[in-house]
Amino acid sequence: MDLRQLRYFAQIAESGNVSRAAEVLRIAQPSLSQQMRNLEDELGVELLFRHARGVTPTELGLKFYDHARRILQEAERAKEVVRSLATSPSGRISVGLPTSACRGLSLPLHRAMSEALPNINLHIVEAMSGTLDEWIQSGRLDAALLYDHKAFEHVAWTEMMIEDLMFVVPAAHTLAAKREIGFRHVFQQALPVVLPGRPNVLRAVIDQLAARYEVTPTATDCESLPAIAELVRAQAFATIMPHFALAAEIERGEVVAIPIKDPTPSWRLSVVVSQRTLNPRGSEAVAKVLASVIGDLVEHSVWRARLKPTDRPASTRIRI
Image (cartoon, rainbow, N blue to C red; front, side, top):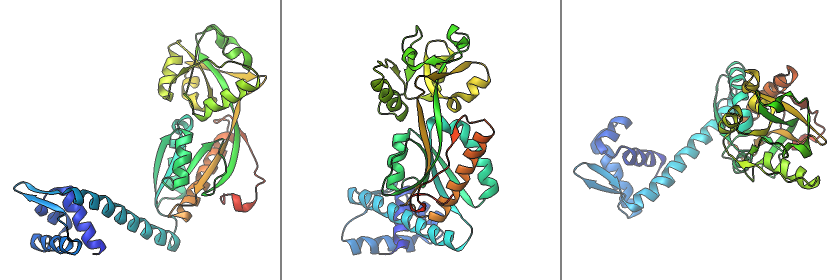
């Protein structure tokens, strides 16, 4: 059994027809059929059920297909590793961006990538920070931007900045005239608060601060940033978010972000690289561009945060 047979079998399983698979693979149908018979003889099982309309994988065939696809994908990724070391950074790099940053960061990141790393095929994945953390540890993501990241064995990281959370209210509401609001008073307003549900990182920051200052953070749960923005625009709720998450709505004058004081909730943002990536050169190059884009946005006040110079040992940092 070799990779060629695995590729042939996978294509037949996906096509559902040997003739159609032979056309895609550009080989003669009798030769393809013989390859499959040889594979089944070697394994001692029937992988394909032949019928008048074509072929269908048997139960064992479906299990074999799952393994074959994973093996073929790993073989392709192994090629990318070697190519990335021999040439300029290239290949497909998956970058995870948290929901609160994805809207504002995707376009400038794509623009910077097209200029700095044209041979990289960037794949952006948007998810909650906790999910991104799990995926970066397992190697499902190559790099990511994470909030309040904790050190893990399979991740190299650089802490980028500190970002304050703000009280966001409808622009037409009387609360919008406030220049600041105390943390204790956020949940005492007539306007109810909507927040991402637990165990979201933002909710954890609020809950921990509330417990420390004996505040009861009553809030409606909502896991969708666009839905939260719509609820606030409609004057049904207020929310707690970083300025950057709702920058478009703030710029259009639909909502107002009010600084929270005594204390000010905040979180730290880190650019991380999975040490299980199969394209370490490409991943570190993308992380460098991501960090540069974030730095530019902060320095030009597009992203309201405080850049944090790192003093961590080089062994725990990505090289950016």
